[in-house]
Length: 398
Image 1: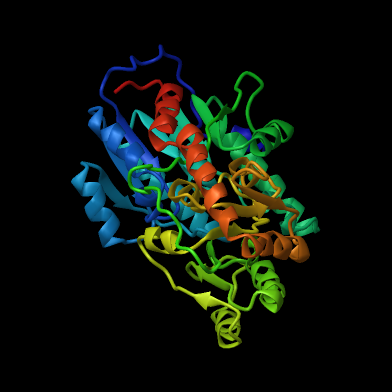
Image 2: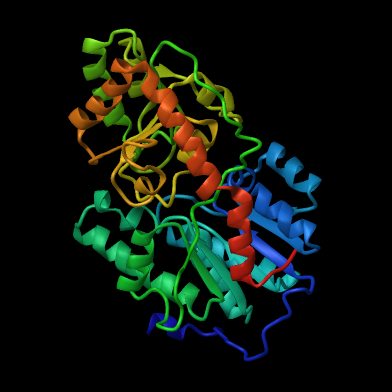
């Protein structure tokens, strides 16, 4: 049976809805915390425009649920495994979304990240929901070269491509964060020929919440904020730190982030080992990264994960920190080399160490580049500017 011949998929014809009318909008996430970390201003704007907004995500998070309730957004938990391929679990996700959509009758869906896009998209199609808008924040780990080219990896990628096609067929709009994802969407023919991805520069950053903060003199203090995954470049960060400390023993290397169930997760034991050796300061997790960004001189993310545009970098730009990251899609979109930071090849520990050492040699460099980072955030990554792009693509007005 062809994937796109699944029974129940209907595409009723009809005229486009007026952009001014009140809609029921379902926003679907794979991580509850992301609804406030990445989407709070968008959800505020949707609710403020008079739409009924319902957010779906798998985790119970009292803080997030309170924040959503305060802005008039309803929250519903759904079963979903963020990582891994478990057919029974994924069927539960699809069926739960379909049942909720059938009962609540949303006019529009806006899922983001891989599993929400696939399963919310397919569920909505089976119910004839026409206004399907997708936010591709990154195609997912299975499309990363780090995932390998084994038979299993290629088979999983092929399956995901077919599911993406099924979900996105006749979508209203598909937003992407970077050219590489747009190119892959075209290369794998995820969208029909008559639909072109709409570029949006990441999730954006609230420039008032993440205000500019001049870095303290001395140091240097390097900070990496990320999920504790090998793909994020944690090991390379630590190995480069060892090199830098040989010449600059006062340099400090901090790591902030939570442990993860991803297949490439860093173990707690390894983190503890690095801390006990005096290489790394592990800062744990937090709901507010601003004090840590304000206390560092340079932000580092040597990721080779298949990023969209890393939110952590956007926050560092807004606070006014120079950025060292990899010359890869998503990451490199946040850096003008030599102006507000530096890019290095992925896996290149020596180049990463050299980049960090340049800030240790010249204490004024971080201040100079940090001011350029803030300017870049203001000119390109303001969340309100980005939300205007999203509203226009979804055919909505305030």
